[in-house]
Amino acid sequence: MVRGIYTGASGMLAEQTRLDTISNNLANADVEGYKRDVTIEKAFPELLIRRMNDDGVRKNPLGSSDYAPVVGRIGTGVEVNELFTEFEQGSMKQTDNDYDVALDGKGFLTVKTPDGERLTRNGSFTLGKEGYLETKEGFQVLGEKGPIQVKANNFTIDKDGNVFINATFQGDPNRLVSREENTWDKTVLLDRLKIQDVDNSRYLQKQGSSLWRTTEISGDATVMATGRPKIEQGFVEASNVNPVTEMVQMIEVNRAYEANQKSIQTEDAMLNKLLNEVVRVG
Image (cartoon, rainbow, N blue to C red):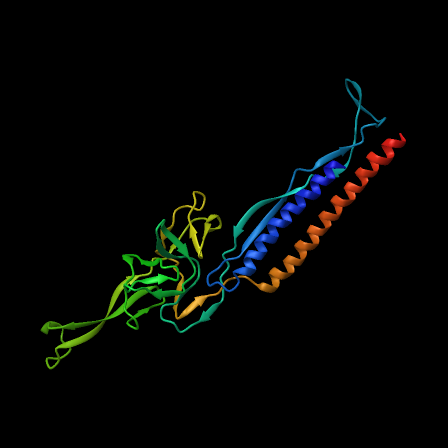
């Protein structure tokens, strides 16, 4: 009976972890670039149940021996095996804000933090005081040459992540559009967004503020030379959380939690009857 209590308790602990994960997903359903977390549960090893007082006899060339045939299996509980992030593509939301970018495909934007470079899918950026493209937390967005510094309404980003600015040239006769002008404008390639990826994105570690850091298992982040995602300026990627699905799973978790709770209450009542009534009568 005590084993039944431990089995029910392990189920309650596992469902509590799953409920916390679902609650966190729902809380971040409106955060751009957020990726939902998923919990994976596994059962403890099952035990074989044998009929110990069996009068059967196993015959062999050396004689005979008693045997206890297997009559079934008994579970010993469950535990959370893994908590991982599901990197399913989120939908595109148009903002018409030049500072916003969204990735359509596999890969991550790179930002500079006090703890080093971090990866993100949240492309909701702003223009900092010094003209650098930054996250809402103030982390600078990195290009392949370093932090990207632009001016308001004076840059564009193409599908491949190339950042162009409008530059004005003056005083060089060899660069004049015509001899009658002394200034001219030209679109100049400033940099290209530093889009990186890792070998095993499943093992990236969340750091908060829509940032991920690499781990030993995920591998180091490297700049994507091929297979780069398509960049959409004026869009942000919505989270991949489906609130309806998460609410359905929350109901399932509550039902499973209650079932484990009732099994513990039943085991406790049976154990109480055994100790306080059956033993006393004996």
